[in-house]
Amino acid sequence: MKNIKSFIPNAITALNLLSGLLAVIAVLENEILLAMLFVFTGIVFDFFDGFAARILHVKSEMGKQLDSLADLVTSGVVPGLAIYKMLNPSGFTLVEVLIFDQLPLVGLIIPIGAAFRLAFFNIDTRQTDHFIGLPTPAAALLVLSVPCMLFFPTADGLKEVLLSPYFLVGFSVFIVTVMNAPIKLFSLKFKNFKWRGNELRYSFIFTSVILLMALEFAGLALVILMYLFSGLFSKKLH
Image (cartoon, rainbow, N blue to C red; front, side):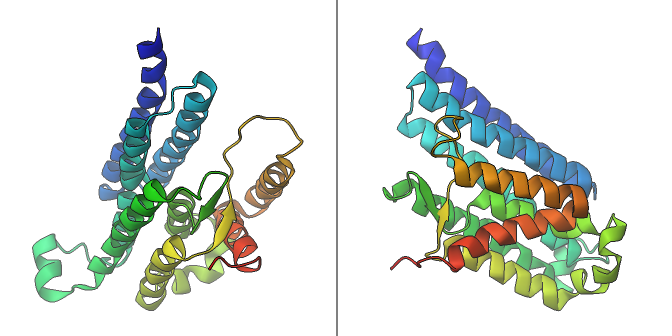
């Protein structure tokens, strides 16, 4: 029975990884909205694998490592590829990019930054009820919200900016920086679903739903930035 119980969280983590792999294929096929759906699905699985491990009392070192490996694909490789594709509007092959225009390769700093972020998380004993640096799932949603905005009229006035190579390069550097910066951020992972002790989480979720309904993917970007700045304007870690 114990072996079955310990398998459940790892199976959920595997679904996170599968979602990430499907998202990679979607990005390569220029199906960015589908990629966002798969990434969001993977993030949901990422939430529930840890929750299942705590509820079933089967937390393990293997589960922790597997979780980070899945996150690297879903929340690291996918957004990096999305930026790569946006910086390569001509559709150059990899060989052509390497020879004629290396700018799209900037997008690859995102999975590299995510790898460092996840490795640090795995060895940092402080990050039990909070995060240090923007979590990779939040960073992935922020990155993917940019190309997704282009499909909706709420961002019509921003298209020129969002497609600018200067913005995309600066944005990529910003993402890598905030993932690895010493910024203390509250965790959205629930130990239970009671109101007491989860007031901040529920309030944030409620505000997020309103912004998403009103502004679509622009609202998603605002939600992640709001989450990030909640840490920037609080006491910075030393």
